[in-house]
Structure formats: C-alpha cells, structure tokens
Amino acid sequence: MSTVSIFNDVIGPVMRGPSSSHCAAALRIGRLARDLMEGDIAEVLVEFDRSGSLPTTHESQGSDMGLFGGLLGWDADDERLPDSAQALADAGIKLRFETVDVGDPHPNTYRLTLRNTREEHSLIAISTGGGMIEVLSIDGTALSMDGGYHETLIWLPKGTAAEFAADEVTRHDAGESQLIQVKAAAFVEHPAAIAVRRLAPVLPVPSRRDMSVPFTSCAEMLAQDGETKTALWRLAAAYEMARGNFTEREVIDKMIAIVRILRKSIASGIAGTQYEDRVLGHQSGRFNELMQAGRLLDGGALNRVVLYVTALMEVKSSMGVIVAAPTAGACAALPGAVIGMAEAMGKSEEEMAQAMLASGLIGVFIATRWTFAAEVGGCQAEGGAAASMAAAALVTLAGGTRDQSIAAASMAFQSMLGLICDPIANRVEAPCLGKNVMAASNALSCANMALADFDPLIPLDEVIDAAKAVAERMPREHRCTSLGGLAVTPTSLEIEKKLGAKKAKGCGGCGSC
Image 1 (spheres, helix red, strand yellow):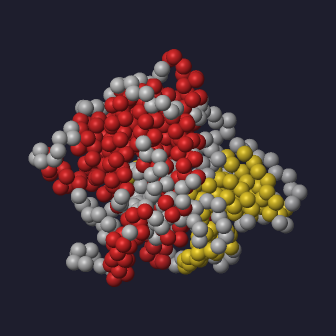
Image 2: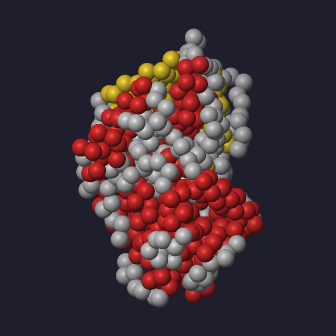
Image 3: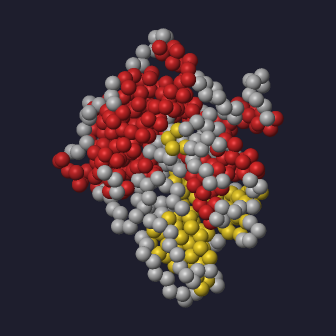
C-alpha cells in the first residue's frame, strides 16, 4: 500500500455522512467498481460477512449512501448523497444485500458482484479507516490497489509479452489468460488485449514512482532533526512536500483551503441544522446564546471549543460538509479545538493551517503504525487519535517547541486508551459528541501540561503501539458493531426502533412521537 499522506489519510476527505470508514470509503469502493463495469451496471449483489461490522451498521452509518453514490460516479461531498438510494433506483440498477459466513479477517469487507447484459465482475475491498480503502481481489484474482494510481487492468493471452512505462506492473494468473495490473500516472494500452479496464484514482494526492518520505515514525523524525528542533508544522510540510511533490506554499495553501471549509461548516452548524434520521437535534445554538450571555460556567476559550465541536458534529449528523480529521466520527475534536482556540487568540488562517499541519504529522505516525478505524481499534483509534493530534496542534498555536508538541500528543493519547465504540441507536452521534468534546478538552489540558514541560514518560510511538495491543484484546462487540456498551441499553434500542418506524412511515419529523 502507498505511503501515508496527510491529505489522503489524515486530514480528509472532504465529505458528507456520519462515518468516513463507512460512507467515504464505501463511495471510493463504489467508484472503482463503477469503473470496472465501464459505468454500465444493471445489478449489484453486496455481501457482508456475518462476523464483521457491516451487517449491523451499513444502513445507519452511511455505507449504503456512500456505496450507492460511488456506483453512480459521485464525489464524497456531493449534495445528492442523502438521496443516493432513490437515484440508484431511478438509474435502473437492481440491488441486493446478503449476509454470508465467509470468515473475512477485516471487519469492514465489501464483496460486490456486478452485472450488466454483457458481463459479470466481482470485487472484494476493505475500508481501512478514515476513508482509506484497499481492493483485495477482482474476479477472484488477488491483487492490491488503494485508489492512488491510474490502474489499468489488461487481460492478455497467456505467453503474450507486455512491457509498459509504468510505476509498477504485476502479472496475475487469470485462468485461461493472464491479467496485467499496471499502476501509472496515466492509463496504458496493449494491442493484443482481450479486455481492458481503467480504474481512475480516487485519492486527492496520487502515488508515483520513486516517491520517498523523510521519516515514517516519530523516533525517525527526532533522530533526523536532532538538535535542530524544527517546528513540528515545518517538519509536517517537509513530509508532505516529499510525499506529494508539492512546494511548501502549496502544502500550506491546501491546508488553508481545508480550514476555510471547516470554518464555514462551523458557522452553518451554529446557525442551525435539520435532518430527520438523527438522534440529537440542534443544540449548539442554545449553547452559543448562553455563552454570549455569560450564563455558562467560565471555561474561557474552552467554551468556544465546545461550541465549535458541537456545531461540527451537528453538521456531520445532518449530512452537511465536514472534513474527516482524522475520521468523520471524530471529525470535530481537532478542528473545533484548533479553530476555536485560534480565534480566541486572534490567530490567522495561515497559523490555523500550520497547527493543522502539525496535527497531520502526528496522524501520519498513527496511520503508518496502526489505524483510525474504530471497527479495528475501538474509539481509541478515532477519539484517541484526534486528541493526540489536537494536543500537538494547540502547542503549535501557542508557539511551543517540537518536543513539547510531541509530549502533548503522547499524554493526550495515553489517557484515551481503551475507549470503546458504542453509538447510541446505531447512529454516529452519541456518545460520539461527548467523546469529541472530551478529546478536545483533553487536548487543551495536555497542551498546557506540555507547555509547562510535564514529562509524558512514554514516547509517542510506544503509546501508538500500546493502543494497537489494547485493540487486539478488545472484544468485537466494543469495536463499532453496535453490539456493546451504550448501543445495547434499553433506551438506545428504543430510540433506534422509533427512528426506524419514522423512516418506514416517511415521517416528516414533527417530533410528536
């Protein structure tokens, strides 16, 4: 798989939907499946392994919405996504879901069989966290693609020579023929091809030949930078310059663009959001009124942070545009903390972007060693990562050092180990809101502790490894399956039942029930 990119894996995608692991990833899988069928799809069979997370979550957490949008060729922030099921039906595409017992090792595994009047293809892919994916097989042939390349699949007669100017060429046995998988910056051709399929990239930062990054772990970065003690955001910019072939100015401008999307989303959340199929209504407006009137406990800038976190979570739950940073379920802690604190300090958007870049590098270290997927690691993989990233960002805003930023990230993550994922009523709203607020508050506390040179004791890389070890011992029920914790309380089940009844009736959400 390709090397982690801040803009691919950590701060992004820009999307709609409750969960990046479900919605954005499913959309990207759907886009690749559409390309495999050259846009001509008549029927789709979707199979989920009974022991995975998707049988119980695919409808309520956005997998269906994302997958349908991808099959239609839409982008992850398309405003039509909430109506993708109807659009799929209007396009004449027949859809069937089945739960199967196949023992898929990854909990977020999609098995798609696609047909039209001429042909049938199959695709197996996984969502790896934060909207990232990997295709594992096509038509029963094991291969690997993550959406970072122009992928040309060429079926040739066995024994046919095939040479390409490409980043990577892999030959697979495909029964009576050979399948040549070509990863390149553009699609390729072959005159003897029996069939050709062109799968376009779905990631914003493409992969390329001979790409290398200066470091992939915190320890490597510290060893390389040594006593220079470069600011963390500059080290992040250097990393992404190498990963994406960008200039420093391009990296900063990309992050400023994300900051502007986030500020717009925060404002829309405070102004008010509506969506029928959600647990919590508009609450940030009331919080803002009381904060402005001085009727809340004096939390200083933390109250603004809580407001912004709440607003972003409400935008997410109303299918508005958010940025998965690092995921949709944990989309609010980092930007809410950074933008809220930066505004309270009178900082510019460029300084906000620098803080976000610093957080992005912490996210690189997490994603390289582990995952952001709650289905794999519980909420410690989402909320814990967000707290760690936000703590480093806040130290950067305060003008702290490289080492203080890393210390803050380590301390914030340490206090989030063991956090389970147990969404109430199978919606990614609560206790997700509280966990995002907790992550942001934790980040602020740890940032101040680091600025005062508190000792984190455990190096960041070791904390990440410890979280991974905890996840390996965490029961499946506590890893985003809606089968444990608050998700199975009587009240949670009753809320889910009522939401399901309203949806079945086409209720307009008057609130009488």
